[in-house]
Length: 117
Image (cartoon, rainbow, N blue to C red):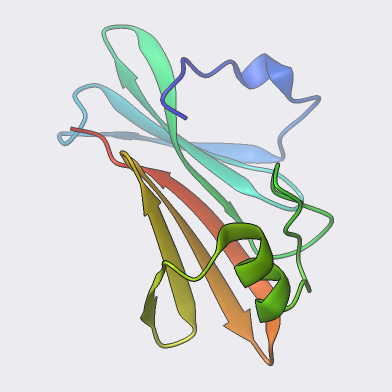
């Protein structure tokens, strides 16, 4: 996920918030879309995505998990090698995590997070 981010790939975003960020170096931005938000950081004049979050709408992961999928669907697609804290199931691979919130046996939130060093 740590590829340079081009906000022009999206037809439009509703708004964004920009903050100075001491953790990453330059600026931190969160772009808000109708059904998701994407957080980026700026370093050396380039913008990089590090977080994607969605809790509604038609979002679907590349592997096919979508809002209102069942826990069984999640385990079929991603397996059972997850850590669990309450309703949140987290899969870790390399420098990234995929956290899925399950409420009433259905997916209600999906978050990708790239761990920035």
